[in-house]
Image (cartoon, rainbow, N blue to C red; front, side):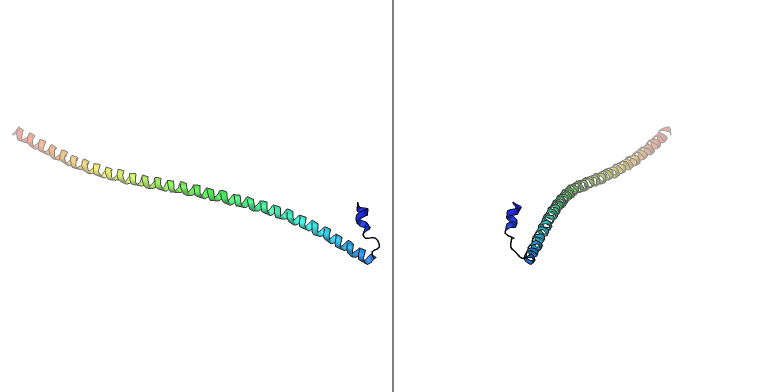
Length: 120
């Protein structure tokens, strides 16, 4: 086959043959460069897809973390409200205890006074 391919070159001057050889070498070189560029392009496309997937995963993680953060903030608010209610309830009960303690002391004094009157 290569004999038939080379047949058209018969009878050409050495200068023309040299030029043809240079052009064929240049074509081979350009084909190799193109193939190498194609491999590089495919590699870069794969790397880009990998980065896009990484970005997408990170976006999903951010959404998940935001949701979790919101949930935790709501829980904190709920716990803070419960703490305030318990604190208020405690103050009310302490006030009631103080009032009842005062009433108890007053009643004890009344009892003591009445016992003293009875002894007389």
